[in-house]
Structure formats: structure tokens, C-alpha cells
Length: 401
Image 1 (cartoon, rainbow, N blue to C red):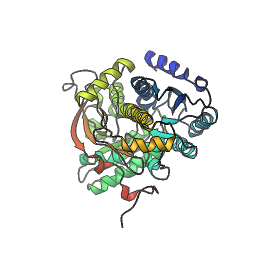
Image 2 (tube, rainbow, N blue to C red):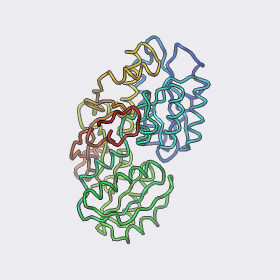
Image 3 (tube, one colour):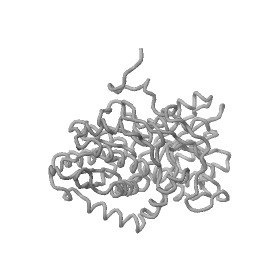
């Protein structure tokens, strides 16, 4: 963790449980349980906390006469710790909204508690389809992506006849991404040779990569994220997989990852995302502000965290109350049109649907600077890549026929 991140981590800890008085009607209390020290701390932990704090400050730090307070905790990528924090917050502080919980099992556990206690929950760092299926609720929202959409958007890069070998992180996020990717692979006429799973937080991928290299696969698919993905890409290059003619592919890589890997190593990787900081004048303006604050440009998860927090606060103001169901109803009424999502919409299952973008990592020669890392190849309409309502098990979704 660099100096900037250590300072930010210290400030986050200072926002702990004792910072808000219990059941104070003159306060609006937001809370985040996230990864502040592990594999996802940079792409979705400390960085998204910075974005959420920006949204609160930009809103004015108060709404309808209520002071907005914000508490954060490090769940250490453990669902039981995440659930423990949320239960404590509910019991002691009467939080009004959960604004992001990273790691799929931790998010699912936290969502269940929020649903039971009539607390709004908003997710950017987690994209599990379970959050909009068995966990769906009128007061729960999935904002930035889902584990169906990311591989679906990646599908146009799959070529008929290609042989794939997948290396997948072994928990729900990886399982769901792999399932969707394999379905796309079959639809495009590709062939899955094999897939292996590794534990979250792994550092040595040599055995996985050597096996993949000798498999005869044309493409090595890395279904991973955060520091795990960084290590996978670096080690794959060290073992010479690209030199052997084996293409590396991943449905999810962020600006933070590319900065850590370096363009020389990451160049050519194709991915799918719901946001790129340098795509429009509005996204660029936010990106520059975030860079000045955090020291890195925002990725999809950070930008989504800001967007959903700001939208929630607008809904509280419009509703004239912080009661969850009233606020949720306003969230569905208020248009979503900001630097993150243009003409976004919230479906019955709580999924905020917006366009996605197939992007490719630039070569060093194409890049004009440290954060000029992606070129957008294609825009994918949100309705075409988001988890289909026809497959939904959410009881709020009305099925035709």
C-alpha cells in the first residue's frame, strides 16, 4: 500500500462506528463495508470510499436539514465480518443506507440484513446476479455491472473455432462470470478445453499458467480481478504465453490494474466496462477531479459508487424523508443522466441498466500519458447485455404470458 493509500486508510478508520449518535433523526447515516486492505482494496475499496465521500461533499453534506454522516469498515473479504458490521450498525446506529459492499458473499450477506431491516442497499463493487434474483427487494439496487453483463459484452471478441482455457477465482463472482463466458463461448463456436479455479488472494500462479500453456489453448481466459488479476497477467507474460501465440483475455480489467501491470505487458487486452473516464467531456471532468483527490483516475466501480450515492441523496431530498420505501420509489422516478450513465433506468429487480463498452488496452505508442489506457471499440446497449428479465427469479418482475 503506497503512502497515499495509507493516509486514506487511516482516515477511513477514523470514520468508525462511534462517529454517529444512535437513532438521531437529524442525521442521515450511510455505511460501507468493503475491502480496505486486500485484493480489491485499490479497485473498489479505498477508491470507491473516496468517490462516495466526494458525492456526499458535492451534495452539500446535508439534506432536508439532516447532516449526512458516513461510516466505513474493512470486512477483510470475509462475509461473516461483513454481516457482523452491518448487524452492529443496524442495532447501534440505525443506518439509513448501505452504499457499497465488495466481494459477492459479503454483499449477499449484507443485503439480506438490510432487506430485513428496511434499509436501502446500493451495490457498485459487487455485481452478483444473486443480488437481483433471490436477494431482490424494492429497496435494493445493483448499479454498475452484473456478472452476466461483463462476459456478454466480451462475447464479440470470441472467434469461432478458438480453444479456450480458463483460470477462475473460486467464489461466486468467478463462478458466475465463468458460467456466462462459457455460454458465450459455445454460442460463438468456440471450445472450452478446461477450467481451473484458484483461491482468492493467491500470489503464485505458476502451476495454473504452465498447465494452461501446455493445454494447446489458443486463448487463456483470466476470470479474476484486483491484485490477483495483476499477478496473473504479469506471470503469464513472464512465462511467455503471448510469445507462444496464446492470447490473454479477461472480461474485467480496470485502469488501476493496467497502471500496476504497465502498458507494455497489458497492451492488446480486450475487456468490457460500463465506464471510461476519458470517454466524454463529463466523464473527463469527473476523472480529473477524482485523480486530484485519490491519485488515480476512477474506474467503473468508483464512478458507479459516486453516481449511485448522488442519486440516492437526490431521492432523499425529493421524498422529503429518509424512509427506505419512499426513497426507493423516488429513485425509480428521478431520471438517471450523469457522467456515469446516460439515460439509465432502474428495472423492477433493482438493476440500473446503462450502456457498456468493449475496450482494448492501448499500446505504449498509442498512449499519450499514464492514464490514457483504453480505446473504446464498441458501445453495447444496456438492455442487450444486462442480466435478462426473462431469466429472473425476482418476485417483483412480472413475466409475460
